[in-house]
Image (cartoon, rainbow, N blue to C red):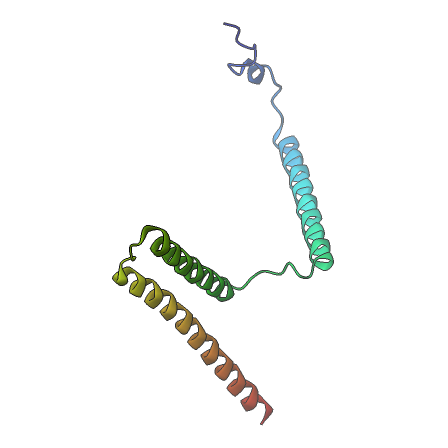
Length: 129
């Protein structure tokens, strides 16, 4: 079995010890490099956002609505196909619970949206008086 010579950290023993000031200078240089890299990443991100304006972040409530509708469509399609090919019906309780859960989710998100719209309209009207 061949083990490399620096496997046990032997090269660490023979390195020269640096003074405190040299260590601080090295760390400050690494910090400046890290800050420059961060600025470069931020600039690249800004350029990407200007070139692709349609790639904005999706709001959480819109994502939930989309996933709820997709889930209901897939559940309905699966229930119809299972009933057609196996000649058995899915549990009516399960179907009721699925539609009730996602329906409640959609109604609650719509209520939040309506409430927020009314609240912001009232604030705008109060400011304009």
